[in-house]
Length: 105
Image (cartoon, rainbow, N blue to C red; front, side, top):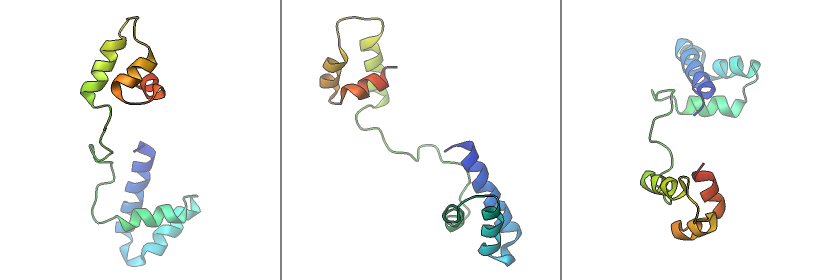
């Protein structure tokens, strides 16, 4: 997640914990005045159960086709070599030519 989003989440957490007696509406109003959408603020407050504001590493989607080993193999296949086209590599790795183009850069 972007640092900007982490920063917003931590600011919402801090303001809400400092003014908990005022309620969620108080916190939401403060950030809506800054131009943050209402649904974003309430989504952040909904997950406020002492979760960290930063994104947890490893919390994303697991790579299915291109594991780190396969990415290295793909880079070796194309490393200053002729003889293998992106279409051939796509067949070899079982994905689209666009994926090959994106991965070997």
